[in-house]
Image 1 (spheres, rainbow, N blue to C red):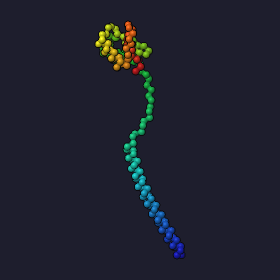
Image 2 (image 1 turned 180 degrees about the vertical axis):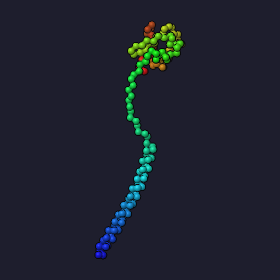
Image 3 (image 1 turned 45 degrees about the horizontal axis):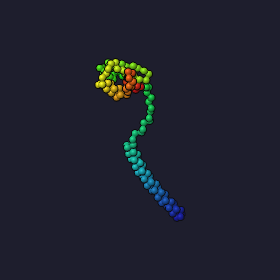
Image 4 (image 1 turned 30 degrees about the vertical axis):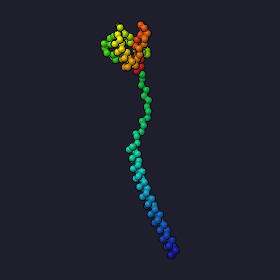
Length: 133
């Protein structure tokens, strides 16, 4: 029986060594798990927010009216002008001689605020403002 007891003692020692090694590995895995949790938490705190999907909003085109254009001009200048609406533009014509100062003010408003232009055509000269906003 000595051989059998010896064999069982040896197996017991091997089993104890294996169990000890498993305990060591479990401790290492626990430490790794804690470290990975810390790393993940740190990464989440510095990660930029997810990109929002790009949504293309189609808005119906708005067309300017004569009233929209008239409101941009001060009353004293608007009174000197005649406004006409076409399919593509609002045409702005002088009712009277404007003089260089008033002409410059009107031209500035048409270009800078209404994205329009001056059309030089002799007696048919006028300012043209696009209706599409």
